[in-house]
Amino acid sequence: MLIEYVVAAALALVGLTGALVLTQDVIGLHSAAYHQVIADNLLAEIEARYLVSDHPLQKLTGPCDNATEEQQRFCQYLGAGLRKLPESRIEVLGTNQIHISWSETGGAQMSVFRVLPAPLSPSGYGDSPNG
Figure 1 (cartoon, rainbow, N blue to C red):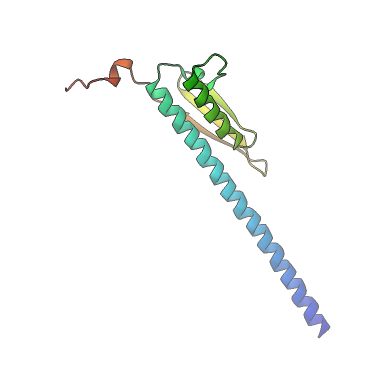
Figure 2: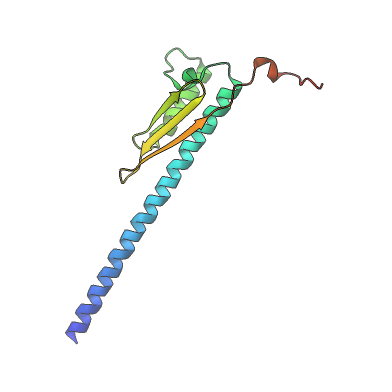
């Protein structure tokens, strides 16, 4: 009878350990998906700002020491978003390519890359050619 209790306790412990490992895996997947959404949203904001701006991509994402108040707020927004991504960095590659990378809890390196379309010309903001 004692052996049955010991076996039952051992099986319960193995089951609990398996459930804990599975829970950690699910939390890790949720965390990775959360970070992916943050990075994608940051890229979308940068793309939107780039398309309507007359500034090069490097200036939109670079140091904001001598930036206007609006650019300072955008830099603060980017900084806050990047702080949510562990060990993250943002890189501008060329004139219209941007890359955000970060490290996940298990050490996996993640990244999001986007090639941005050409910005709108300043004349494109006004009336359409069709009236």
